[in-house]
Image 1: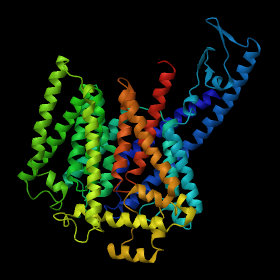
Image 2 (image 1 turned 180 degrees about the vertical axis):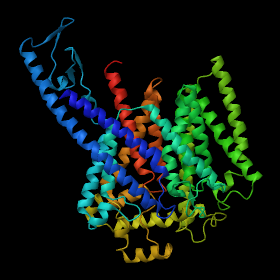
Image 3 (image 1 turned 90 degrees about the vertical axis):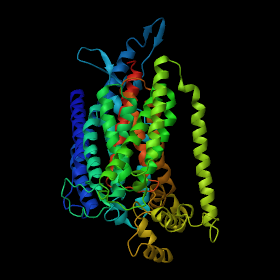
Image 4 (image 1 turned 135 degrees about the horizontal axis):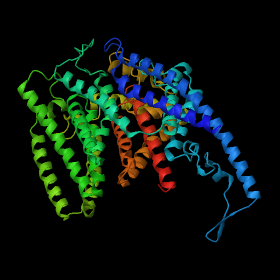
Length: 572
């Protein structure tokens, strides 16, 4: 049984490696008919690969669990017999008895020596993130069972497919990867290679260069092999943090070089692609990284190196635009248009360079310990909180005065109406109204996974307003993932879904920040990925090109976390 269990574990891990490779390295490039129905075609690819892959993996997992259960009983029985003979061991003058629960974590090798049972690793204690994922899976099932739109709740809205079936697959993929995949950090490099190619195509397309002939490319809102820029930025948000953390954390020069090149491509496409959500992510990532860089002078120096890289890439794009002014093909007035032409990033480059050199000199002379200046971090966080508070106050005040505050009434960013935030004002207001109309206790479980539109269009006044706002187009979600989760899966779904990401970010970043050596320090990659996805989807939504990837990243992070904790427990 032990050999069968070991064989099934190895086979499951290899199949999961193949699945990850297909998802990260092949899926992003799949296009069947250009940009026409790109979401639908990507979904069918994902469905085929996942059903086929999990159809092979799950039976192996089942055999592993059966074998583990039988081995557990045998170990417990053997340990019970051993206790009947000498009931305890003498150890340094004390007695120690091994119970059945502890014995189940141990097995005998071919030489009769006691070793830790490998299976105990994947059936060990559940983490906070595990519990949140299980709770979310349960809330999805309850939401589906209580929904009045069973077919829609199961498969999801056409073109989005984020129904109960997809949500359960996300949770299942997290547990399969975290329990049965053997973590290998070198897998990050092919993932980065594929994502880097996607990013490079995105930059070239934005500057009117099309290495691939793709149907529908004349629409400048489509980029690379991903389609709409909102879908593209969702994918970018999940993968881009790999390069930042790799450069910031790695000691091997080729790891850092790979991280730097990938980050440069990520910055180039992030600032040029056109979706403002990317700038929210970039700001959040750099602020977050600055706050945790106070752990050492080296970490802070590398943060400013990433600041130099950001400004240098922006200036490189500026020179490109000055050299070929007609090449950039996104509309004027966008933030992407401004940042790829402004000289402000050149001033930022000089400032970051001065600070970098100052830290480098201080580090060489051992004259500076940035940990003594953590008050700067607190001041920065406080300033950010105050700035957000002031903005929200002005937004509320300006929006509730007929003609607005003097000098602010015409500033669209300070007036919350239907057009605010690329029509997020309309979609968020619709989401709030939909939730208000959910009756009684159904607010706990929502209207059903991906049933936002199904319920919205049963409210006559709101349906009429949305048809007018979007020229008859169907509003399928609130364009805010957390508001959408509240409507679709209720309070229970929102709390558990948020718990997955909040716990993952805190646990992965906290452990990775403290780990000075070994693979554990790369846990920050998965924490930053979850963080970027969470920030991005404050103004976006679940979709086939981002959500599957973030759950796989969460599974990989949990896998690494469990592996590092087992090493600690084993004293290695």
